Amino acid sequence: MTTKNIAVFPGSFDPVTIGHEEIVRRGLGLFEQIIVAVGENAGKREFLDLALRVALIRKVFRDEPRVRVESYTGLTVDYCERVGASFLLRGLRTAADFEYERAVGQINRAMNARVETIFLLTSPRHTFISSSIVKDILLNGGDASPFLPSHVTREDLKFNI
Image (cartoon, rainbow, N blue to C red; front, side, top):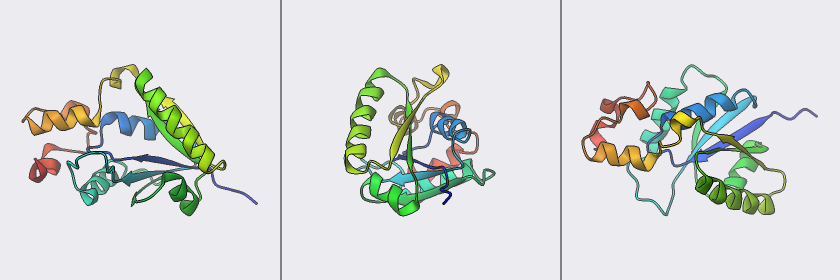
């Protein structure tokens, strides 16, 4: 039996950044398919609604047939089971990211040993970029375009700011 090499890249992507895009594009060198799984984070106040986040990420990867974008609820490891993914893809910017993601990865593995977490280091030029910072720039009328994927424009976000 052949199993597909599928990874889930979960996150709130509120908004999607060039750092997120980079991790997915680099991940395509490792996986046959990447599912960008857009979830709701109960611990964060939502900036963009879920449907818009999904639409923006689909726009970013519209020319990449190996990237699928879906929304999901519930535990990420349960979602991986539902879609047949054996890997979770995570990007690391800082040591603090590593500590947090390591703990989450270990919990996920304890819940489902069939799902392995793979970490990719963000390129140095993107280490300072986070959705929270980009959101703050947008909310305060600044130009966040250097930190957004080229397919995402301020007009895409306009009615949410």
